[in-house]
Length: 199
Length: 199
DNA sequence: TAAATAATTTAACAGCGTTAAGCAAAAGTA
DNA sequence: TACTTTTGCTTAACGCTGTTAAATTATTTA
Image (tube, rainbow over all chains, first blue to last red; front, side, top):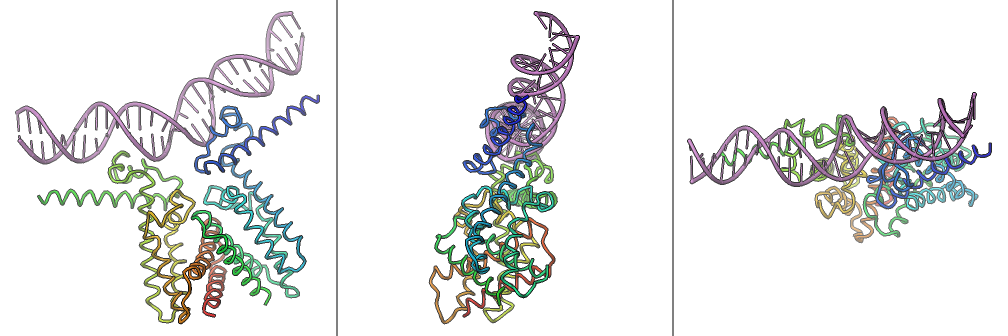
């Protein structure tokens, strides 16, 4: 009876191997050249086997997206927990976001890229709301005792995200400027928004 | 001898037809489903013919990118010429940028998407510097009589671009919030940067 | 009219995602 | 032990992709 468990565990392993292989290939050759056959090669099976673990290629990308949001959420949480003042927390959280985007460039790309998985991500993947929820909490704290409307909170988060995501996008598609320039732009932008929120 | 000209003109026509067809297909079905055979169908030829006008599919995208930058540059110029004060000009220019991104969504995507044409765009396509040059000029005017260093100017342009590009990206990949929210975020962001520059 | 050149198409290659059929080994049953 | 069923996996195939070479048709030149 224990053999069932062992087999189940092996299956879980192959599933993880598929995801690992996909990400590894993306890191080495880019998402564009990721193919089911390459994944199969990497895990030493033939391509059809993958379809016993994932419905299709998109499902693999979605799972990696999920993984990405899980890691990002975790790191934003950690950043927050290392500060007490909301303003400091917010700054640290966005810097964590920034760091994640480059430390896990491929994950970030599959999370926010022009890929298939765009449209209704929050609907099919509730985890994708994690970072937003965390940051909105701190924005509320920063504004206390004023309580923002849902609309207002959304706009503020949105402004933050646009700035940081814009900077990241530009840095990923182009070869970014020097790190110093980036850090400065980031600090100016974040500081400006924080001040405009706190005011 | 005039027949040579006529043939050349016809050839120029088919070239334009290829570009038009490619953009039309992208508008109707998205870049992802654009194929050489579909283009060929649209211009009522077979696929290999396209290769007498363009080296490959990427060359077609590059040509459309070029076209996009040409239009964008033109519209930014127009926006500038309708105002006198640098601050007003700058605002109008970024709003023109914004409008272009949505009026010509597909062109904007191929210009700044995660596509192949990313890395050294300015090197292979000098036109892509047009908008930046125009806007930098106005930034300099805004700062007068202070003369910014190249680095400083670059950082300021870069900050602008990040904010606007971020907002646009988010609006294109996700279904954007209401127009009012967007306009407000945009106005706040642009206004904030302009003030921080002018100060 | 015959030869040369140009324009266009058909056929093919290698690769893609995906599915169906086939096979071989293991497990269950008598 | 012998037979059947199930499982795991592969091979083969379909229709699609970008791209190239060969074959074919049409046009121009001699």
